[in-house]
Image (cartoon, rainbow, N blue to C red):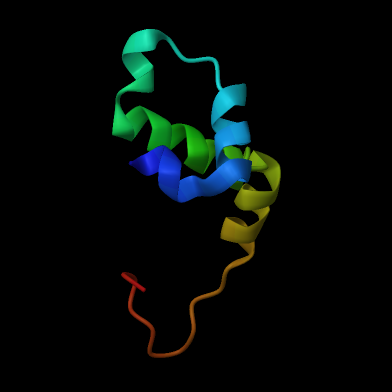
Length: 64
């Protein structure tokens, strides 16, 4: 059912994944592969820069 909803472009992406027969039937594995494909790799250096540049606003708690 999942592969029917992703359409022809999604099916082409799915076919590019290197999956075993067992993995092909698992929805979580397929969902994780699609998420990795869409999001891509994160740039750790840039993410660290953004984190370190962040300044706490007045009245903002530590949790936000």
